[in-house]
Each structure stands twice: as C-alpha cells, then as structure tokens.
Image (cartoon, rainbow, N blue to C red; front, top):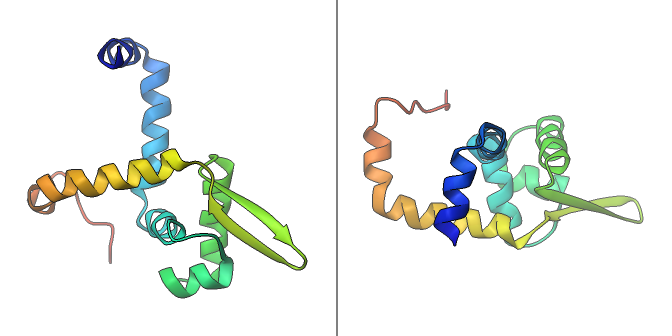
Length: 119
C-alpha cells in the first residue's frame, strides 16, 4: 500500500513540490538545530538561543517559520511563550534522518553536490 501511495505521489507534481517545501524546513541548519533541541521537550526562546546559538531575533524568525509550517507550536503561559514540536511525525523524520546518516553520512560529507552552508 505504501509503495502505491508513493508512486501516486511521485506522479503528482503538487505533492512533490509540497514535500520539497517540507524538507526546506529541515534543510536549514538553524531550523534543524531548533527542531533537534525541541526533541528534548518544550522550551522558551531564551533556552533555544542558549542551546542553538545565534541571536534571539534570528531564532524567533526561524521559530515563526517552523510554526507557520506546522512543525512547531507555541503556548503562552503567563508572560512567557514555550515552543514544542507539533507532531510526533516531526521527531520520526529526525530519527529516520539519524538512521540514514548512520549509513550514508560519510558519502554525504564527501558529495560535491551538497555544499555546507556554514561560513
């Protein structure tokens, strides 16, 4: 059943485009670091900044992007806002990436088609 659904999705350009957009959320190093940090549980922006690095303004912008895409949700408690991963499926994608990297990480590091976005 899964293979049939994937075959149908591959034939649908809109589904492919939407999936590519999803992976853009995971493809940015800062957003990926935020998601990885949130796997441990909900956090305030200041805690995320401390864990990930960067400025509060930059992290807030990435959190807004992740929230707009439905990957992260926030909850206001008094004067503070706490962020958490919106769905267990997000954690599943991160775990699947870890498993895949355990098999292919060295090749990905050496691949000339994937350039590091680090300065």
